[in-house]
Length: 456
Image (cartoon, rainbow, N blue to C red; front, side, top):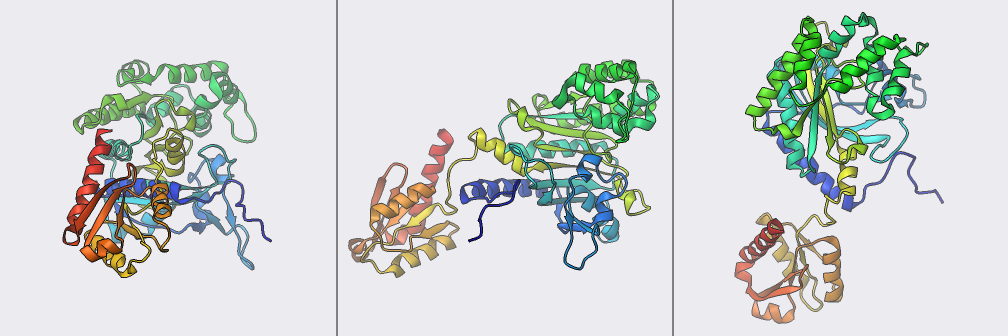
């Protein structure tokens, strides 16, 4: 017999995992749509040259690409997408005349990376992306952070912090240290500060090798690390950055952008308690050119960022001569779900319908079938137990799977044209309810349960 296990880094998702997952995805789709973003889909498989073009991804990500080869195909021609941003750049270059600009899109789908599996980290995972193409406006930068905030808040994610920076500030710092030609390598090393610490990053910055590490002097590495470590806090940290780099045009532009974004977020009702600045935040991908975002759940930083992104004003230049600036972010669904599961925020239901109709022994099954159809027509989810088993077994099934109510109609109830509603959590029953008030009775019972949930 074939071993039914899945490959390392992949997994099956059971109903208890899929139900809250689908609920959160619906929340994200609603939030993205409420800001005017439009859904698109791109293939899971892209041409290799699309994914590996200059600037498309960091060396680390490119080493994790899954190559796709069919029998008789050309090796190295196709690969599984590693994110949804590079395919977006290709999509926009191909369809820009059809969609127009500014173009606001969202896409939700699986991406693939051959990295080592860990908690909340898989080889196939779902990203929930939203991007605005065709504008350099700080309003779009601020709106991206606002959508991260509103999406996570609507999904009932525990308290979180959105950390912002602008790559132009770091670019200005490196240019002031005569390191403009080593920007990519320096920022990739700096992005590891939280993982390997100051000493680890300092050693990496000063090492020069065939992999493109930067080979900085001890003084240059210290200046960069001092700047990063003292540049953490609220908007007031920008004042110190202005003292050090305010005369550098590129850095001044990045500082001004962050001030504007913070003002807009305040106007949009995003609490400053949910925002922070980290002047060492670089993000690992080479294509970011301006503002960058990284979001962690307070007290759960070990899971890493659950939503991140930034501005990429040159990415589409891989595919089209026309300049198409963009900004966006991605919410990592699988890492978020792993965190919320460990934090006990997902609930335990495995039912997609709130009401279970019992298949009472001796009762014509057409009675329950008719009731179920009536309730579904009123917008109430209903499941019918398929077998005329003992009622205790059927109620146990409903309780285990998270149904809220059970409708019980025995032969005596049929004769009197009444039904009983059982509240499965408490076993309380409302008895002898007339068939004519079926919809009103069930809706009323569900409202009672909803009010109790809100109070608790």
